[in-house]
Structures are given as structure tokens and as C-alpha cells.
Image (cartoon, rainbow, N blue to C red; front, side, top):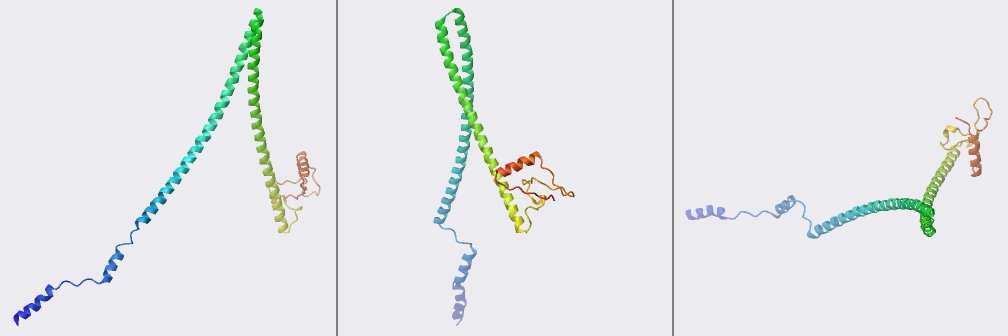
Length: 231
């Protein structure tokens, strides 16, 4: 009897501890943080970053190449112009020296040397004249190009003024106002009238020479001349 009681008291101590339920394991996994990315995702992200870096590097290198190309072109143009100018200066000095030599040979009566020196002087003068002609031709082309650019800018400004006048007329018509009797303060800055009424007199002021020239230009351009009451 006593032995059986002792055995029953020792059994609970000998039993192993109870295992934890499955819910606690899932809770531990949730507390440990999000799942780690797979190796394929890591490789894909690294490849995309490397590709972006390569594209940016190629763009920077291309910009650097373009800048260097532009600088090289400007340097070549400068060198070419300076070389041409120096060559023309050398030819001028050569012609001047040959002229003195021809005069000296003529003073000595050496007709053979005079004929040879004259031929060399003529050739040098022709080359110098050709170089000067080419230079002047390039300058004329540059001036012509600049004039064409100025004409294009003026045409663009004229088109913008016409567009502003057209939009102003449409705005006046939409507001129910008369375009002819519009105040000059409402007009755009570029639009000017040829005739203006003098306030309080009821008489028309004679247009000046500048306004007459502007009126003539507008008539030639096919525009209508409007009288505007000053605001």
C-alpha cells in the first residue's frame, strides 16, 4: 500500500511536459516578420538596377561626346579661319617682296628675271585674291543667313500680332461691344490706330508721318484700318 502511494507520487514528475499547440507556432512565425524574397526575385531586381545604371551611364557618356564634338568643331573652324588669314598675310608679304625684286631686276635690265618674277607674283596674287574672295563669300553667306533668321523672327512677330488682334475682335464681339468704338486702353500693346479723336473738340487730329507710314503698310498687307476712341 505504501509502495503504491509512493509510485503514484513519482509518476507526475516523470511524465514529459505537454507539447505546445499549433496556434502558438503560427503566432511565432507571424511575429518573426514578412517572408524573405526568393533568390529569383533578388536576381531580377539586381539585373534591373544594373540595367538602369548602364542606361544612365551611356546617356552621360553620349552627352559628354556631344559636348566634345561641338568644341572640336568650333576649334576646327577657328583654326581654319586663322590659317586662312595667316596664309593670305603670307601671300601679301610674298607679293610685296616679289614686287621689290621685280623692280630691282628691271633696274638691272634683267628681262628674264623680270618675266619670271612677274609670273610668280601674278600666281601669288591670284591665290591671295581667291582666298579673299572665298572669305568674303562665306561672310556674305553668314550675313544672308542672319538676315533670313531676322525675317523669320519678324514674320513670327507679325503673325502673333495678327492673332492677338483677331482674338481681341472675337472677345469684343462676344461681349457685345463694337470693334470700331472700342477704347484704346482695351487694345493690345501692338495694335495702333491711324486716326484718333480729340476729346472735347469733336474734331479729328491729322495723322502724323509715322502713322501714315503705318497705315500704308497695313493697307499693303491687306489689313483694315480702324479708328479707335481713346479711353
